[in-house]
Structure formats: C-alpha cells, structure tokens
Image (cartoon, rainbow, N blue to C red; front, side, top):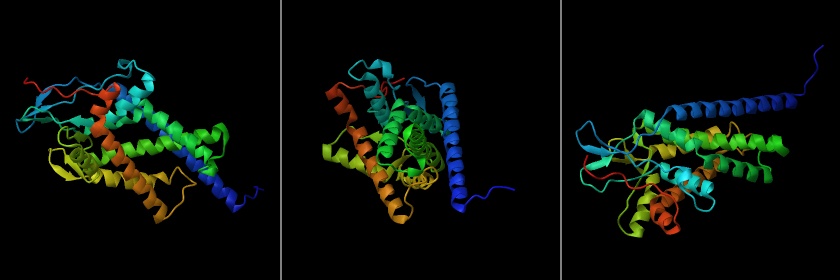
Length: 279
C-alpha cells in the first residue's frame, strides 16, 4: 500500500522539484555561455565600409582587468568593464559611424556581460541581502539556502541580459548599446542619458523607441516568478519591480555618460575613443 501524502506536502515537493530544475537550467546555460565566449574572439578596432558605402568604425577593444594596477584592482576594473561594455563614443571624424551589430555580435555582447566577474559578485551580494531579509523563505537558511538564492539572483541577471542585450534588440533591429553624447552642457548630457530608456538607436543608426528596454524588463519580471517562490504576486508588486528596474537602468546610463570624466578624475580604467583616422 502506498503512503498517503497530504496535498500541501505534494505541492511543496512539486515546487522544490521545479526550483531544482530551474537551477540546473541556470548552470547549463552558464556552461553554454562559457563555451560560446571562449569560441568567440574579439577583433581589434578597425575601419570598415557599410553596405551603403559609408565608413564605420569598430569600438576600441575593451581593456583587460590585469591592465589596471590600482587599489582593489580586480573589483574596480571589473566594475569599469561592466560600465564600458555597452557604451560607445560616436566617432568625431565626419562621415564615420560606429559599426552596427549583427545577431552574432549581439549574442556575444550578451555573453560578455553575463560572464563579467562583477555579475557574479552582484549575485553573491543580492543573495546575501535576500538571505538576511529571509526573502523566499522556501529556500531556507544556511549554505543550502544561500546557494539557492545565489542561483536565483544569477538567473535574474542572466535573463535580463538575454532579453535586453540579445533577443529584443535582434527582433526589433535595435542597437543595445548606449551612445555617449560627448559634447554639450552637463544638463544636455544628463537629459540625453535619461532619455535613453525611451529613445534608442536602430541598427541603421536612426532614433527609435527603446522597445528592448520595456519588453526586456516586462519579460524578466514575468520570468522572475518562476524561480522566486516567495515573490509577492499581483499587479502592484510587479509594477513596483518594473519601476525600480527602469529607474536603476536610468541611473546606470547616467553613469555610462559621465564615466570618461569620472574615470580620468579618479584615475580609473576606461575604453579609449574609437579610431577616427582615415584607413
């Protein structure tokens, strides 16, 4: 005779099984990203011709973490790389533009962002904060609970990057990078940065509505409920998470706009301007 299991115990078992499957999916996805990243090499900055015949310039190569030897070099350089990965300068030489990204380029950019050391540091911090507040109490406490929260936090950042850097930019033919203004007053540059959540740049170099920002945020919040069993459901909590996500993206874009000046003042690493000279 089979043992009787109360309905609540059965549902709890199903939730735990689902969470384990989600965590395994995150691990498998990270392994796949590592393989793709290793197989994709970054080419040095160079001048190319677009299909229309005009000249475009690849952004300068990103600096390596080992290039910075200042205090807390690994942490500081990792944060600086994260700021610079999706930020580009418009070439100052007239008639040139930054080369657009094809589907492969967007996927590689997503992989690079996801595998940056600061991504894992952020997930570790968020997991610790979540454990201290006992968010998702189904995860429990101790090392096992922390591991589950770390996996969920890593899944949060990975899904956000996948939707916002690769999937929706590919579908809407949108450039996922932020284009610094470089000139103008501080007020003008601040306005340019804040407007990025609404106005982005298409693959063709034209202004367009930033579909990727809004669709990616909505998709990430929807997926969030899958591996956060303790998340409060409903429109109100989801709207609050949506507003926080958009607001944090706006703040990070402002940091990207003024990062060259900030990094020079504090002697921090940053990406150089693209090559503007004629080929």
